[in-house]
Image 1 (tube, rainbow, N blue to C red):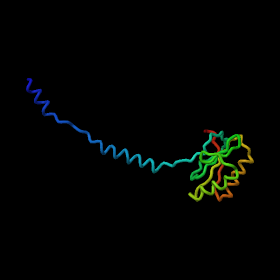
Image 2 (image 1 turned 180 degrees about the vertical axis):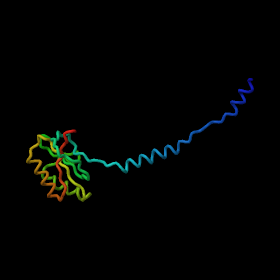
Image 3 (image 1 turned 60 degrees about the horizontal axis):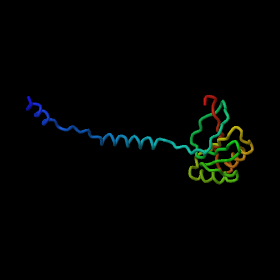
Image 4 (image 1 turned 60 degrees about the vertical axis):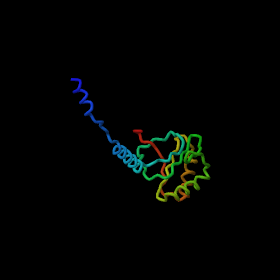
Length: 138
């Protein structure tokens, strides 16, 4: 009986699981999701957007400009002056001429500053300038 168990142990071969195809699939999925993901450039501030019943999702946005309740203007996580909005938008539109601009303004921001920013965007050549709002469901 002792010889039978020893014989069974010697006949066992080590089984291997080849994980190379699994690793290849993981990398293929990673590349797929990176290629198909659109990265959004945030304005760099948190604002309390006003609500609107007719708010629509805007696609193809290149530039996001944020205006906080203290009327400070932010682009790409840095504060800019209202006079520098036009130059910054021109530079961003040079990279992507078909893109649009979204102005994300706090609902307590001065309307004059918002209009000045939107005017600077239009003077920079932006044809699609939108003002961000949240829907009643947000």
